[in-house]
Length: 467
Image (cartoon, rainbow, N blue to C red; front, side):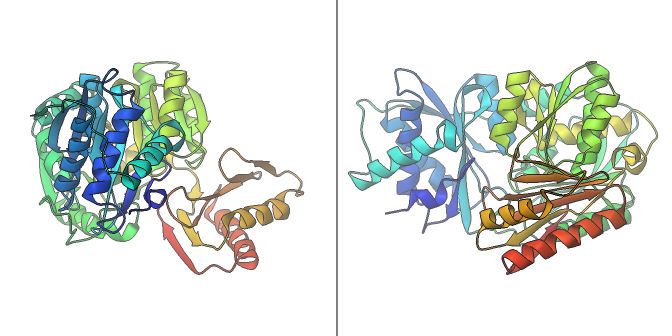
């Protein structure tokens, strides 16, 4: 029997197929999802979509059967990006599930679940309860029938999704040349539909849907996976390059010179556009984004609110404050008018709209939005992240002029620098981010911090990702 404790994460379900996640498990999760929603007396229909991985259709069908066993109907939307599922959930006011492992390698699959109106589920708001119910079901008969089975209907919502996004963010003005790396993921389906309605010349890379990811991993947070896009932008003379992850809910940007643009800079750009349209709006940013983001928001008359990392937390905070927009260092961008959900495509449209409205290049547009030097995200494999965090607290806690806070992991702030160390919610690593007023300051603080980490718990591996 599958160990559901290993695959239920803080924000979603994710594991190896079939050793950790198989169709029997997906069936039990489908039935348990309905139970968490209050059963057929409380929910009539559940949306189900899936990505391009070879195992996704079978898992999605098994999940749908579990839903139907509880007497609830299923609307399947077929191949879809994660933000298309969020659109469907918001547009139809229905709960839903999308089968995807996002940027994980081909051997993985997973499930992202939401309540009606794209309200996210996390460990504390439903996922743990679903895990426990599904475990009990698998330990007995594997399914609990609840009378008459629900029906199933197929609906294609891709055109509606594209129309909604381009109505929210029209792109008008000069014609742009845009290179897009879909990484053989779901952007290969959604980009042609969305971009087909706006005036751009598309330079496509790896648009064939292929869950084996034959060209490179579908994780644009890793600089190695941007190499082909950077070259394509320069070689084709494109105005901008866009890279999407496997389920196309995250977007990363390369400027006209082939240089990566920080997600924090894109957050600031979209925030300024939002504040121009809605003066005084509240903007959410997680604590890993550059401190330039809240500074720029405040300078443009907005109210910045700092939050922990994680899409469920961001969405809940946005809803609480009715924030117009939110951004994360990881390339997730959230929009009130998209049911507080994240959409890499909407972020891309904001950038294209800003470009098309004038003659500026991407590098010029973001020049004032990235004034500080950042380390990128450093992932250090350690035996015990909590012990390391305690040691860092002891090392920096008594230094004059230094502030510590524990909103998410440990953030230490000096006069002209800050860093954050926190355990990952999805991997057995410690995530480290450092920023300084200058590159020299950032490097000095980064090296000192990593020396502390190494001294306390020898690091077995360090990977640096662009942040």
